Length: 399
Ligand SMILES: C[S@@+](CC[C@H](N)C(=O)[O-])C[C@H]1O[C@@H](n2cnc3c(N)ncnc32)[C@H](O)[C@@H]1O
Image 1 (cartoon, helix red, strand yellow):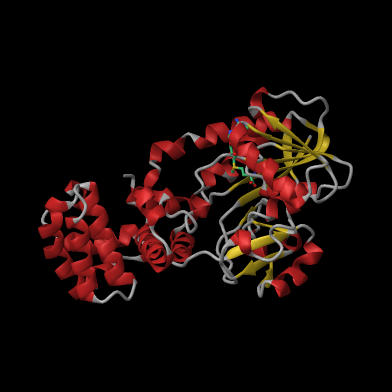
Image 2 (tube, protein in one colour):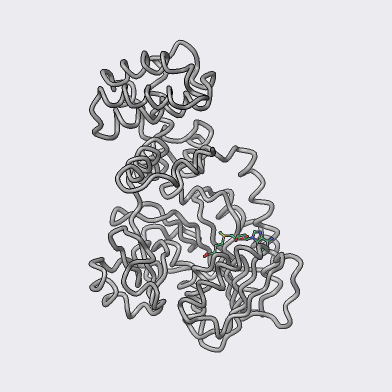
């Protein structure tokens, strides 16, 4: 049986505890491995995957959760004994976990920036500097908040009051986490889940009623709903037909389908029947700005996986620019803080002469004003006010 099927069979507190263990281990995996290393005679990589997983989860309980030491050792060893693929590691786990529960000093000494694999820590520090990379790592230590976008920014106050949340940014609402489909107003479609930083790009596009707006990497549709709510005519395009089903469901639930045409195609293969007044390009990227939500992303991806993005992004940005009316506005955004997928892509395409920057002012960036760069782009690094994702946003104009 696959591990995910075991999880699905759990319910109540067991399910919650399993989730909490996995989340704690994944959030600080790099530090946990550094804390474990002195207790091992060989590299952790040489352990079988089940033994490695149990060791990391045991260490997460000992060092990050308040699980009693005897329970950490006995429950983890019992779990190994009842798992065919881990049975032979029971003695090894027992010996190492006894040391783990009585000595957290190596874990405590591992710097917060080592939560990621080493290659990623280096990439973050090279791109952003040690201090900013450290703040991003810090942000990963805590469970993310739940943010909602109301259909109209004017409704943020009422939504916050009804869900015991608080208004953040220019019209988002932070609410206590819970089962989303059971929260007040979900069925009625008055709001959708969207990180406050993810809501910024569509707001900065400034779509007006009746304008032709292309949302060119649209699925699952958080930004499409924001654009549709402005009263503009929207073309929501994505290469993934299955992900576009999510866009349709989201639009139907929120009652925003009327002015949206959905197109399943590759951006670079699609020929629009008329040029756009405005375009939003939320390009495919390494998604390193959402690691606090999906910390496993740091370990699933390799340097090669993320190296391919800048070429793709530049190609998609150029193709998008050609679909824009002269003087039309384009927002390019990516949910990664790495400069090679952000400012460097924009600089390259701007140098080609199709686009120029339409700088974003500190006023427009609101709570992210401290992220406005000298070029007038925005990089939503930790703002010291509330947790959010890390987006790069640039506003451009067709020359
Ligand atoms: C970052 S996600 C978009 C998120 C979306 N804008 C939102 O707010 O919900 C990137 C999307 O780009 C799509 N994509 C990747 N390459 C594409 C291409 N060449 N043409 C069109 N869509 C593409 C992916 O299928 C994915 O849905």
